[in-house]
Length: 464
Image 1 (cartoon, one colour):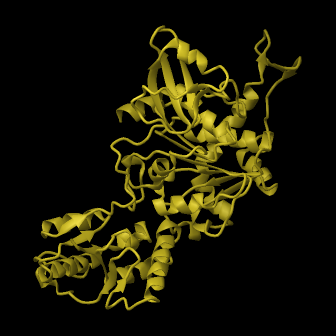
Image 2 (tube, helix red, strand yellow):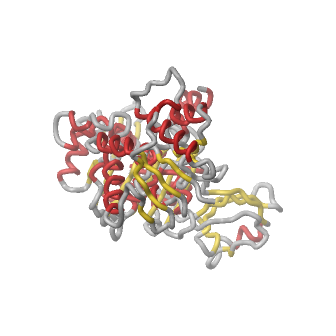
């Protein structure tokens, strides 16, 4: 049955391509939404970029038909800009008739009253608009096309039981073919914590490479002096270190090690081993999207406050790297190679360190705003706080990948860590990328569960 879907501005800003995702139904965009897109077009950050993208899509459709009368879309439905049905008398007393939300509700209510044989549905990602619509008897729904429907987001690992004889085969020849008795799907580069059914003390962590269960390659490796310290960190480290895996996603709460692990491997692979030409740190500027334009200085200087997690990680890694080389003599003084060392690396400054490698072209710090048209080749790109980006931007980011590059998305997709009103725990770019990319042999994902920052951080993450 054909339906009328009235799209709110929030849907167009969340996904500029949303108009193509309603099959054979009628898509109605109130003219008020076009006005709102016009007001948003100059905003910095994700909102402004998506507003301009949505306008471009509408402009392209305008070329093939009249938006006032309705344009037939490739999906089979029609798209129409609604100029009428604005009578606000259908709204109860007490509503602010000057608000755009009230006018959109009035249009939807009038359409529903006129077309009683066709369900009229308001699609919005605005919580307040949804509540008001429901109170007025309007059918409302969230935009669900890019919302992850799984009850539990893919973790990247599973626990299974096998005989010790099979476990031993993992370390022989080409590894162990995936046992047919497993009753769970196993994806390429998924990790398996295998416990023996015949020996309680026998257990290993291995990886499914798409064909066989194989041992970890980097179990005894370090990166920039850092060694993973729990099960999930070892899994993430394996994905980060493997040059054959081109996209890695890591989720986890505050203090679980997402940023420091990714940064350590990036420094190791770029500065020490020169596997990649440069590190690109990317951070979405969400809470104050238009503030960056008014901060003084260059793009790098404007981004400095937003890049604190990377700067902290580098500072901690350098301190750790140098302190790990110290050896105390019997008097408690630092010694190295037989010489007394009073203080190691006294002149280190993280800003100077990053500026030095930035001048050499080995480090870049970027915001998502300026990614359109870019190509990153031979680069290790880390996108922090990826739960703040939309699925549309996640796709934009990954399509920037050139030859020889590796992309890493890190973040915490829980609702209390999302400041972007356009996304939630099931519709953000991080979980969307995790679910869409998990079937491929050049991608991998791990969820980190343990907080390792400090005892206080661990208690706060668990009990607050």
